[in-house]
Amino acid sequence: MDIGFQLSFTESFNIVTADFVRSRVPIIVGRDIEWMSSFAKCDPNSTDEIVDKIEKNLQYREYVEDLNLTSLQKYNEESLEIWREYFFNHTHC
Image (cartoon, rainbow, N blue to C red; front, side, top):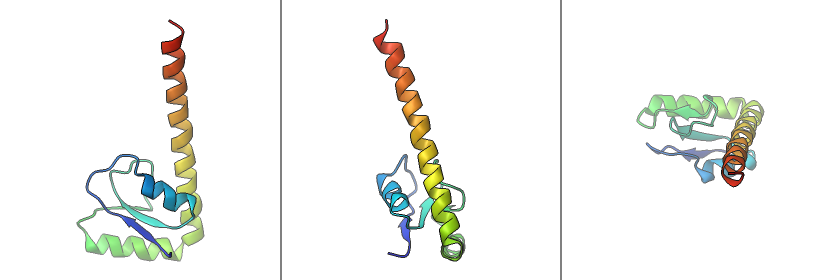
C-alpha cells in the first residue's frame, strides 16, 4: 500500500492510523488525531489540502515514516507514564 487515509471529523487515538504508522506506510489524517505529526494532518473538507498532503507525504516518504513513528512512540511513552502514575496513586492508599 502506498498511502492511507483516516480523514474523519472526530477521532481520538485511532488504531488504524497506528497500524499504518507501525507498518511504515504514510497516512493522511484529520486534525483530531493529536499525536500525529502536522505533516500528516489536514482539513478533511479541503480537497486542495488533502492533495497537497498526499504529494508531500509521498515525496518525503522516509522522513514522514520516521516522523510518524517517533510521534507514535512519544504518545505511547507519555500514555504509559500517565497510567503508571494513576496506578501508583490508586494502589498505595
